[in-house]
Length: 275
Image (cartoon, rainbow, N blue to C red):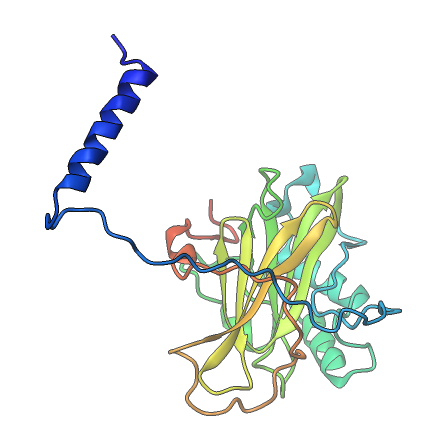
């Protein structure tokens, strides 16, 4: 039989009396002191007028259709990554203008790439044509959460900016090949964790690095940098970077801590050609 609320209350009162009477008992209840008063955030410059136009945003992204490339059955594994990279880079220079020397040299190197170059050799290593073709081995991961593999391609930029990497991701939207992510930076490393792409890049401050988490946004229909932060990196180069990072330091869109073990706990990404 369950004890009634009255009986339970009486028992609690009796217990309290015993505790109060046990003077000098090391187990007695003691005050932890006064509780600090909660304070609301202080708003600075409350009379600032609203801005007339948004500032330049590092994270501004729009999905871009890639014309001239068919996706048989909507399966991106049946599309050659080099063909995709060449078609997209030719039409969508991304952060570079077509008059930029870096864009021209990279486009010329892409034109010399043979189809199938980025297909995995089975060991995860690049083929012997690496020095000629800037397209790295492709990877596949469901980034949009629709249960289908999306395509992730890395393009090394031309000589003089070889440390910079142009990263692009593609999905199939309405049976059409669509670019859902494009960014370039002095990349230290790239990781996949769940549906997210984590990019580590060189910072202008010695011993620190940029860490940007790109996540799928169902409203914008593209990948957005949901976290962009600068963090201490024990493995960062001890000296200053040889060239300034390609990106401009911009305020983060939002801050969300990136678990240091997120990549390690996620399943290994599948390179092109592997199940």
